[in-house]
Structures are given as structure tokens and as C-alpha cells.
Length: 453
Image (cartoon, rainbow, N blue to C red):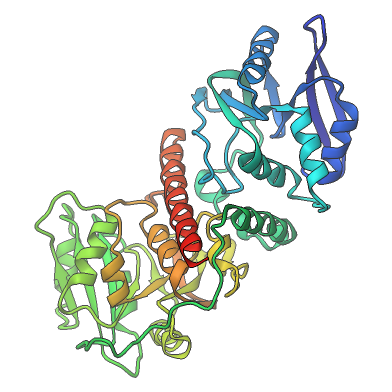
């Protein structure tokens, strides 16, 4: 593969250098870059694809990086295939996720790279760049130039809903192992790494009429609502359960479909408030008097795999005394036919390090189920994206998370999914929100670590 560098000469010419490397993000490649570059600053191409730039603009960018004493300097860029400018997000230690978008080009101070290579004894094949930029986050300066410096044509033209599962692709497993190692070390050096043992959960602390409640927040899902309800009502369990549907003022036939079942296990809630997101609807469900000991998620366009899903989840709670259980799911189309990438099982999770690696990745899996007293205390943020990630981070900080690695859930991908094909602005809004959650969580974990030590 080709690693592309751009450097400025003393007479302000821009030179392009191409290195033929086996692993472009490896430590070995970073060492080869140091051996090749003769200038104080250079520009590294991070993404494969077509790059265009104005020489004067690049020289001004390098000058800005020097003035700011930046070790890494990134910018906005213009994406040709979408015909729009991409405003990159502000950077903080909450930007620990490994897919942070720096654009296609970044300015790097050579001495910063030399300092990093002198400080590390690792030999990463896949996580060299990631390790370097987290090292820079801690030790030096990552600065953004709030202007476009280059144009870029994306090679990977898949929709956002297809790209989001790359990190759980088994073919990328070796890369993920290295990235997790780097992220964990970063959190350790931040004083934000959490370790077991976790708090014990007392399931007898309160009495509940039902052992479990399935909670479905819904807004205008007349085409899928009946399937979701049927998949709950057919559950075969050794305990009592009910179904709480929080209908967020649907304007289609969703309410009629719910009422048509005429089943006393169904609790149909229409909130008095009109400002609720998915998280707010969840709070309505778990705070209801009929909510059971365990609150179990089902999205209104998804289904449980079979009649044993609910029993498997409650069994996991009972066996491991955890506050949160997360299952595995199978990707299907609207007709429930399996589609790539197939089963999403998040086998990267470990009891020891899962709560730390959770800060690096963008999701923890589905379905999610909560011990009701704890989720009532924590509460969901009143948003319609990332609400599940927010509470999972908080719970994993203190309590054991149980995992089910066999698929128990069908996740329907179709054109009405909220993340099927997001605009740049919407993706940025989602990523910025999750980065803010990570920043908040890291701060809390740092404070807890400092108090306990």
C-alpha cells in the first residue's frame, strides 16, 4: 500500500513522497516517515482517495501549525463525491473513538513523532497512528484550523448505516485488539481506567408485580408494530412479564394496531409531554408502576429471534447478578432475510476491560436490558440518538454487564432506519454528542479514581 507525504521546501515548493508500505498505520511506517522527512513539519494523507489542494493554502496551514506549536493540526475539507464542505469536529480527550474524522490530510510536527517513537516500546501493525495521536492528546497539542484546506473524493461510498459495523467485522479483529490496547493504556494514563470488582446488585431490594417488562418506544411504525408486538407476546417464560409501549403521539395507525391486540399484558402509554425523544419515552416506561424488575429493550421495527429471548435475558441476570444485560443480534432486511454483516455479537467485550473499551467504540449491542431500580436512578437522557450508549457507559463504570453472544434479536435494516443513510451534518451531530458523553464519563472516572486513591 502507498503512504503519501507532502513536505515544503525552503523555497516554498511542495514535494510529494510516496512510501510503499505493508501496514500504513503501523509503528514501522511511522519510523519510515521519520527517516524520510527532512522538514520540521510534514503533511500525512490519512485516507486513500483522490486529493486536491492549493499550494499556497497548504503553506498557510503549515504556518498556522507552527504558530500554534501544534503536534497534530487538522482542518475542514471539501468532499467531492458529496459536493459539500465537511466541518470536522473539535478535538478533546473525549474523541478517544478510533474513527475520529481528521479529514484526509493532517499536518504533523516531526519532533512530536520522534518523541512518541522514543517513548513507546510497542510494535503495532494497525494502531501506530491511533497510538501516536492519543499520545499527542496527553503530552502535546492537537489543534484544528477552522477552514477547508483540501478536497477529497471518498473511495468507500457505502451508506453510513453499512459502515458503522466495520469494527465488529471478524476480519478486522487483530486491528481491534491493538486499538483496544492503545485506548486502555490512554485511559490508564488519564487516571480514568476502571477495574473490577464491581458493585453487587441486590435483586430483592424492591418488590415487583412482574419479573420483566419489554419496553417499546414508538412513533409512526404502522408497518412494523404488529410484528414487534407478536414477537413479545409469544415469549415462553417461567415468570410473569408484560409489554409497555410508549406511543410518542403517533399520527398514523400505530395506536390502532396496538389496541387491536386486546391483550391485558399490554400497557399502552401516550405521554402527556410532547417533547420526548426515545430516551424520554424510556423514562416514561421504566417509571410506570407496572414496570417489572427487569426492563428489556425492543425497537419498534425489530423483533425477538424466537420465543426464548426473554427467558435467556432474565436467566443471565439471575446467574451473573448484573445490572445490565446486552445480547447479540442478526442483521435482516424488511422481509427478515439475513443481510451483511450478519450476526453482531460484540465478542470483543471482556468482563475485565469491556467498560474501558466501551469508550473507544460507538455501540455495545442489542437488545439491552436493565435492572429497573438502577435505570430509574440513572435515567436516560431525553434524546433520540445515543441514549442507550449514555446509560450503558454509566452502568458499566460501577456494575457488571452480562453478555449473550448467541443471536437473540433481529435488527431490521430498511430505508426508514434513523441511521440508514445520514447526512454529514447529522453524522457530525451524532458523533459530537457521543464525544461529549465520553468526555463527561472520562471526567467522572478520573474523579472516582482520584478519590479512591
